[in-house]
Image 1 (spheres, rainbow, N blue to C red):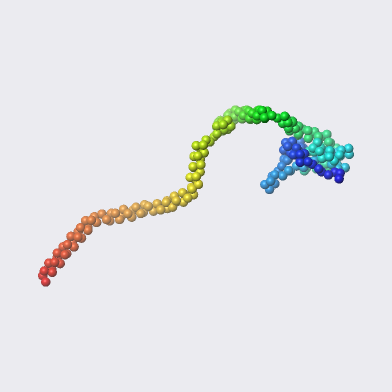
Image 2 (cartoon, rainbow, N blue to C red):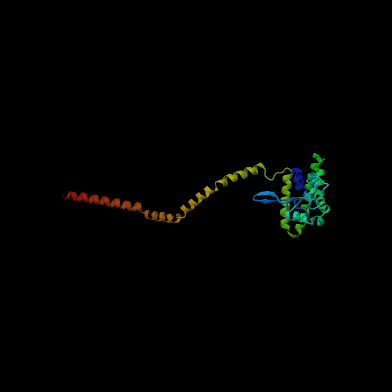
Length: 252
């Protein structure tokens, strides 16, 4: 049946890859995907440069349905701009040449990058990665120079972090096996922190009345001072009483 939308997965993937992440309308920031209820959904619509059905804007009778649904005839637009180019009279205000120019401008850089990957070798890939890292490092150096003029402390911190990152990159890990072992041991000890806290709280409650208990013990100790002497006096008194009892017994 004529006029059916029939895109391949490859065409859709190419649009997403080459769109630079936004609507093809110049200056429109509407992104290709948006998060919806925790999942990313395609937010843009596939629009036809030459209309898919007769009577549509920029329709060409000479084209086949396959050509109308081909990648060369497709662009990504947000809903508002899709409606704008396809509304009555849109073909005059936004002719096919204009839309093709939008497509070419948007996709040229990405297409060149893809063409450059066709003959990519392992050595060239390594070279590209090294160039990208060097370019990034140069940008950081320039940023540090500017930052040092306004905030020396912040620049020093960033420089330190950069040096640590470089050390990690070139085979000097930030954490050695000893450090990892210490961290593991500390984590294990901290795992029982809740129980230790409960024990400390109980001990503190018991010690809270220690001063009163100490005072009580001190008083008891003071009362026992001289107890041995008093016992000896009582013993002597008992002995005298026994002697008196014996004398009384002799008078009978």
